[in-house]
Amino acid sequence: MELPYAESWKIKMVEPIRKSTREQREQWLKDAYYNVFQLKADQVYIDCLTDSGTGAMSDRQWAALMTGDESYAGARSFYELKETINRITGFEYVIPTHQGRAAENVLFSALVKSGDIVPGNSHFDTTKGHIESRHAFAVDCTVDEAKDTQLEAPFKGNVDLVKLENVLKSNADKVPFIIVTITNNTAGGQPVSLENIKAVRKLADKYGKRVILDSARFAENAYFIKMREKGYADLTIKEICLEIFRNADGMTMSAKKDGLVNMGGFIATRHEDWYEAAKAFCIPFEGYLTYGGMNGRDMAALAVGLDENTEFEMLHTRIHQVGYLAKKLDEYGVPYQRPAGGHAIFVDASLILTNVPKEEFPAQTLTVELYKEAGVRGCEIGYILADRDPVTRENRFDGLDFVRLAIPRRTYTDNHMDVIAVALKNVYDRREQITKGLKIVWEAELMRHFTVKLEPIV
Ligand code: F0G
Image (tube, rainbow, N blue to C red):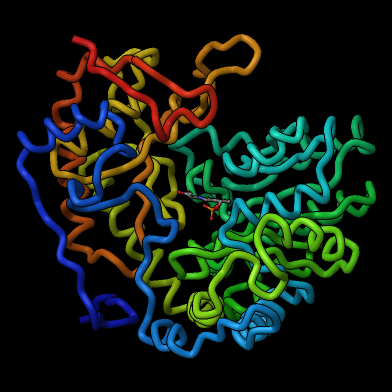
C-alpha cells in the first residue's frame, strides 16, 4: 500500500484555541455589526481571515531572532537578509520595509506620478491604492478565464497579453512600469506561468518598459510552475525563482506571506537608478536603509524564512493542505474558484446564496453564516470590498463575490480543514432557506470593508 502524504515538519510549540456556542457567536456578531474584522480574535475558533503574518515560524527562525543585530546602521542581520535575497532573486539592490504596502509606498513615490497608467493582473487593493492615491490609474489586464470560477485552467492568474499591448500601444508614454502579481491573490491565489511572465517581458522590452513583480506569494507561484508547466518539473524551486526574477526589473514584497514572518517586507531591484530614487523615500517613511522599518531580529528570521520557503517540501505541504480542503468541498459540492489556488480557497457565494440579491451582499452573508455555524472566520472578497464607483458612488457589482478562506502557513492541521469543510457544508445544505442578506448602516469612503457596519435584513 502506498504511504499517505504527511507534513514535512513536526510541531514543537502549540497555542490553545477556543470553541464557543452559537448563542455567543450571534451576540458577538451583533456587537461587531456583522463585520468579522471587528471581532476579537479570541472569539474565533479557526481563523482564515488571512494568510498574511499569521503563519508559524520554525525553530531555526526563532533561533535567528536571538542572534539579530539591532545596530542602527550596517546591521549584520541586514547583510544576511540582503545576501539571501540576492541569491534567491538575483536582484542586487535591497531596501527593507515594514510590510508590503510600505514597499509599494516607497517605490511608487519614486516612480508613479499623476496621470500615469500602471497595467497589471488584478492589482492587490493596497497596490491599487498606492497608484490611485497618486492620481494614476491601475488597469487590470487579467485573463478572462479568471472570471469563470468553474473553469479548470492551470494559470488563471496570467496577464492577458492583448489587453496589455492595447494599453502599451495607446499610452506607452504614460506607463512607468508593468506590475505582475504572483500569485494573483484577487483572482483566487491563481498562479502566473513562466511562459506568461516571459511574454510580458518581451512586450515590455518592445515598448521600452520595466516590469515589477508583486511577489508576496512568489514561492507558491514557483511551486505551481514546477507542478503544472511543461519543462520545469526537474528544476528546483530556487532555480525556478531565479528564472522568474530574471524576467523582471524589480519586486515589491510582503514578507508576511512567502517570507514566513509575522511582519516585514522589502523592495529589490537590479537597477541602481530605481534604488537611488527609492532610497530618498525610504529614509523619511520607513527608516535608515539597513533596517527600513524592520527590527534586526526580524530581518534575521526573514532571511531564514525565505530560504525555508523556497524548498519543495515546505511548499508541497502547504499547497497539499489547501488542496485537501478543496477536495473536501468537492465531496460536498461547494463551489469555489477552480482549481484550488496557493494560499486560499475562494468560495463562490454567487453560486450558493442564489436567493440573496446582490444588493444584500451574498458573500458577506455567507461569511457571517459560516462564522455563526462554527466560529470559522473567512473574509469577503466581493461587493463590499469592491467599494463604490468613485464617480457615480454606486456599489460595484460587476466583479466576483467570494468568501476567501485563507490558510495560514504551518498553523492548522487537516482536522481543522475538516471542520471548515463541514461547517461550510452545513451552511450550503440550508442555502435555499437563506433568502435575506445584510444592509450597510455605516461605511467609510475608501477601503470600507475593514470598518463597515451592517445589519441583517429582516
Ligand atoms: N500584494 C499582495 C498580492 C498582497 O496579497 C498583499 C497583502 C500586499 C501586496 C500588501 O502587503 O499586507 O504586507 O502590506 N495581502 C494580505 C491579504 C493583507 O490578506 O491578502 P502587506
